[in-house]
Length: 399
Ligand code: GLU
Image 1 (cartoon, rainbow, N blue to C red):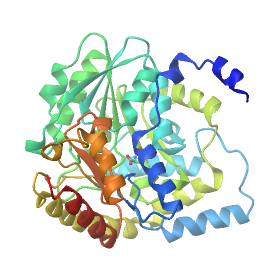
Image 2: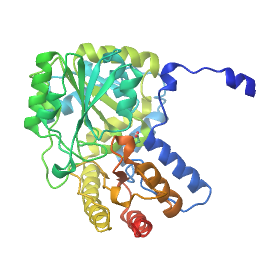
Image 3: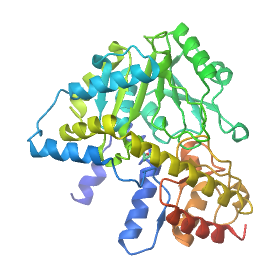
């Protein structure tokens, strides 16, 4: 393409309004530096360092060998949809049948298609803040407006029903929850969740619940899934989740949603034009993971619990840094504002300072809606974490 041509190229209004994912952007930069031979400690993207379950790998391999390499139904293979419906019915008493399940290309795929299926220009979508970096982009992409509800470090960034309900207006189309939350680890208690779902249903507002980190809850903390309320509020409750985190299957790109038939059908129509089915043999692997991966999940979550303690304590001990152990997920979200100063003013500059000066990749908090913090993933080995934390302590020592 010549310079003249590229100058004339006009991007759509939608594309112009969207930037690269901050999490993927930092991890891309970290990988580029590593490829150049720089000894980077990458604590950016949330990606479990554990292998995918052996049974999933074996099942996917067998499916490939047997030639299971053609299109499937856009919604996914029937046995995986049925297994997911059964899993949720068994765990939470949800009424969803296999026809109410959509298997997608990552949880992100389901979230994006649901946003496109539900949000119109001018609609409001209520989300607790700090929030995962992709939520605002999905909302904006659809022409809707994000209305944030602050959560606070003092109570572990819990989501409170009264605060969420106070943000509802006649324009509210949906409430988008993410518990445990990426980046804060904050959770919503069962009582608060019921109040939110009940009030939303009364107003015809949909509750989209991203439960990607459902298995990553520490200290025996209670975990509340919106699936437990679906039988009482069948028209307005949607759960979205993923194989990526639970089963350490990030690269397989498999997520899913369960919800009211009308909403799932609309999202599926979009999926049928966007991606068609998720990868055929990957779905066979996911089916095997659901049936036989539990032991590996339990082992991984126990290890993550130990890392969470190690990382929180080490960060909290750095002068100027305050870090509360998160209730869930696998990130810490320390407040580092006391370390700001010339050359490292704000979370973007501080993250750059750590990358350039200490060769540690972290994600600036501003991408999650709070510029006083940075996000550090502890989904990596204790050895790597110790090295990264040592470098951070040294780099911030002067603050
Ligand atoms: N969700 C993970 C994260 O926040 C993976 C990257 C992404 O999709 O944002 O790091």
